[in-house]
Length: 163
Image: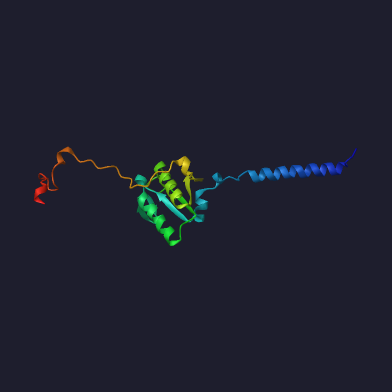
């Protein structure tokens, strides 16, 4: 029977406890959910902001979802497509579901990683869970008042034979 000295047993125990503490320390704080958007903003290729009606502020310009997608297509053609995109809330609008759905579509179309600020915490957009939607100019259809139907711009009866 092999007998180990007390010093060797204590040393082995101390090494095992130290290893467990080290592994536990590596595990805590290792998730990206703990990273704040403010501290990480400069590490993204492009930062865009959510705006009203599913629109985006891109480099100070107000763009529809279609135009934002065209912007990324242009960057791709130039060979300057970012690897990561961060979506922040603007002064005019918080990040809404429609913003996430449009950005998820762009993520699929152009292959970048998209993140958004969820109350100060960064979260990655998963296109499947977010249910990416086709890009569109997010406008409600206009309805004509009944008393205006059949009239021209001056308010007179519309007669196509006069044109």
